[in-house]
Amino acid sequence: MADALRAYGWIVAMWVRSTMVYRASFAMLTVGQFVVTGFDFVAIFIMFVHTDTLGGFDLPEVAFLYATSGIAMGTADLLIGSIERLGRRIRDGSLDVMLIRPVPTFVQAAADDFALRRLGRIVQSLVVFGWAMVAVDVHWTWDRIVLMPVMLVSGTVIFASIFVLGAAFQFAATDAAEVANAFTYGGNFLTQYPPTIFAKDLLRAATFGIPLAFVNWLPALHILGHPDPLGLPKAFQFASPLAAVALALVAALAWRAGLRSYRSTGS
Amino acid sequence: MRVYAAIAWRTFRRYSTYRAATAAGVFTNTVFGFIMAFTYIALWRARPSLGGYDVTDAVTYVWLGQSLGMVGALWGGGFREELADRIRTGDIAVDLYRPVDLQAWWLASDLGRAAFHLLGRGIGPTLVGAFAFTLNLPGDLVTWLAFGLAVFLGALVCFSLNYLFTLAGFWLMDARGVHQLAGVLAMFFSGMLLPLNVFPGWLGDLARALPWSSALQIPADVFLGKRQGASLVSALAFQAGWALVLWLAGRALTLLATRKVVVQGG
Image 1 (cartoon, each protein chain N blue to C red):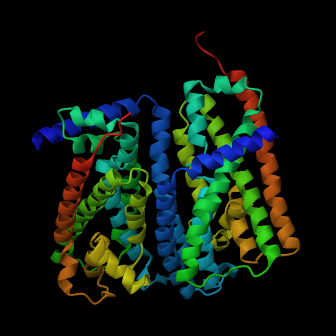
Image 2 (image 1 turned 30 degrees about the vertical axis):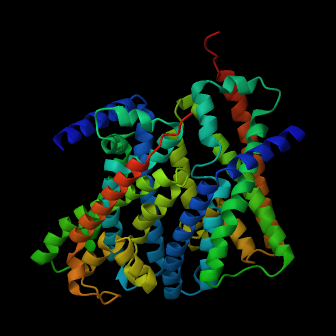
């Protein structure tokens, strides 16, 4: 484990050095990432020019959902988001090179093309988060305060697991990498908005299927003091770590199964 | 002319070979369509007839956006990565002494790609949307034809924008940063995140006057029957005007860039 982490650190450092060769482009890409996610929030802001509440949530509350989802997604993307390039590595055969190196394949694939510019998304989410924390009307009790970091870490693990599941799926369907986007970027987009605006079936799928509801919706219901549109037991609002661990296990198994079934492209 | 038709046809064929990728794209667009449709419904429930749309118009707009998003390729996935690569590696020198026009070559190739994305990725999401929600589909042939024309003109505008941003690579060496910023502007000002008629005040006026509105807002308004008669003609003229201006800008920039090319080695 320590070796794997050290190897991850080495690969990351190498990629950071290589991006710094094109400094102007790096600066633009980082600012770009900051702005990309920023415009999402501008769109939400424009919605609130026309209405005071969306699904019973006011602007600071939606900003809270937006920011917590963005921080979790951004961190997962920064740490292992590159794993979505796996399909390309399988197609051009360069995955074979990774298999024979004395570093776990997972570590190499996760650190592959590590992009520091993705900090842009995290910083932007943190800015919105700071504003939301000031503007949101919450009575801060200790359970709500403890739930905050628990929610952010669990959310990061859930998004990271979905990245790994998406990559594992590419062992079966090399060309279909974009399917994963529906769950990673789509999941991020979904959890930016209040759960109350979506159909009940979609909420059930996001709770019991792919556990996106645990990223921020369920804990946020407790923090913000909103009733659960599905009427689930209160325990669900504290169960994000369980959901995260369960999904991480599933993702680990899927990755192993995928790697084991891998037969090189041949030539 | 025949050579350009052949290029367009080959590119169409090339994209059509990636069937799993196309299916995956349709799936992803459909998922995003569902999420966006619910957010728009929540907004229009709070403010019926916002921006001159009713709920049905707004939901239709969502699915049109998911269907047309890839046609313009404004946020990547088109020719621009390929052209940027040729500029960065110097392969562009080979392209420049070919007996075809560089700009027209890439336009032909991009139109072939756009046609494939319209058929392969465009029809699917809107069909699913029509099953799951009530959509406002045009009832008369004229509107469908006008919509087709608006999409075509939009594709011309998108091509020229992508081409201009990619030529910046001649000066910057690495066009990825420019591409990302261009993608952000396009996403916002095409009306992909929110219809431009909902943008408030000067921001709305600005957004509607910029070329990106040709990519989604105008085709969608034609589709929804918001543009008829004189208003339809002026919308199409707006698109054609931007297409011409941007094409000429591309011409000028190509000339400047070719003068700048230094072929190394040999």
